[in-house]
Length: 160
Image: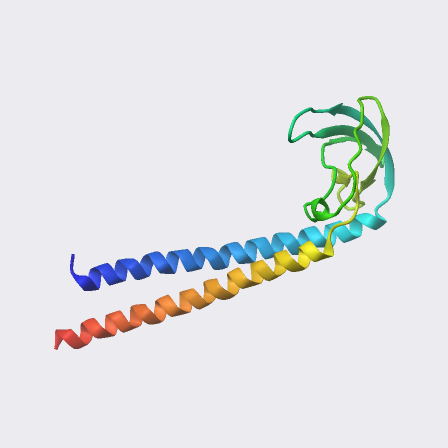
């Protein structure tokens, strides 16, 4: 394989990796910002009475509950938002048939949480990591494109 072709192939791989890093940073940043907004808003959401349907056993124990809000019944298993998992709160064991209080999103009645709120520190850390991924991803793309131009210009000068 000629060295120019190998260099172009290497640059293409690097370009793909840095592009993926930038896109992933933007996607993760968007998710974190959206989840943080929802986490903070959940503190002021209206409460609704719910009934525990089941508490699954094991490592990833999941609580299923049913609640009625605005005249409609909803079934859910969400106990907190993503950023809520970073908060230090005790999670109680609930038994089927037990009455609990959940907090319902007034704009999306199918979305509810048992423990409202989210961690501001986790938001800051995850936002910085997402920003770093975008920064280094875009920087890597710019570097790879400039490297591609150098390789292309080098081939043009060798042709003469």
